[in-house]
Amino acid sequence: MTRLRWAIAAGTVLALGACSNPAPPASVASPSIGGSGIIGDPGGPIILRPPGQPFDADDILAAMRDSRRPEGVPEELQTEEVAAAVADVLWTLEGEPWETISAGGSCGAGDCTLELAGSSAGGPEQEDVWVLSIAPEGAEVEVVTADLHAVPSEAVEALDRMARAADSDGALDDLLLTSVRWQPPPDASRFMLAYRSGDEEESCSMDVQLDTETVTVTEVASSGC
Image 1: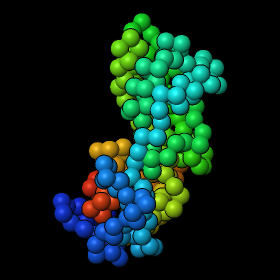
Image 2: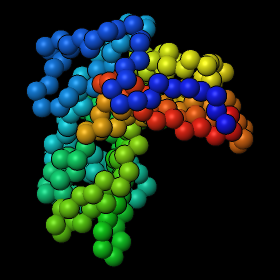
Image 3: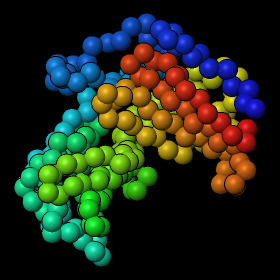
Image 4: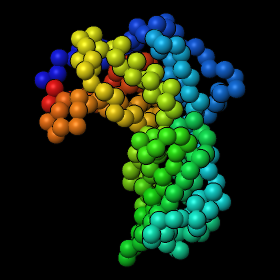
């Protein structure tokens, strides 16, 4: 059983060196989506631009047609209507298009599956992967999974500091931060941090959810600790 005591309560703000949320600069403000700024960090404020949807149908069509996956993307998905519907569900953390993008898909008797992966920096550990279920005839798109790890290194470091500052008993002291995952709107202010003590199967693992808007830890799940 973990000995970690977290300050988890609605409306409870962790004392992380900032008493109020500084307003983001005008150049990064968004009137439509609440900011995902990481604030109150002991190492200094870190501000992220709000998530956005930077892709249009032409971008998605190009990614599907240029696929280098062995099976590529089925032709029935390579339509303007499907591409526009796909672009409408994709988000990136700061609203910027990926620098690299790959696409792959397959179709069964009815629906098709499309996988899009992209990153702006780093390797696979900093990559966003969207898996979509698509009904080509009606261009109906459903998000199956969104495994989103394209988080800037400075933001990863700030989130780690915030989580450790909330750990009054030092349960994270001997654990390494192995991954950070962000979530699209409406949960854009929530980040999932995965901590591990090692690669062994029975090693301690702890998953922490941080809400950077209220600066609170909202969930903690652990095993083997």
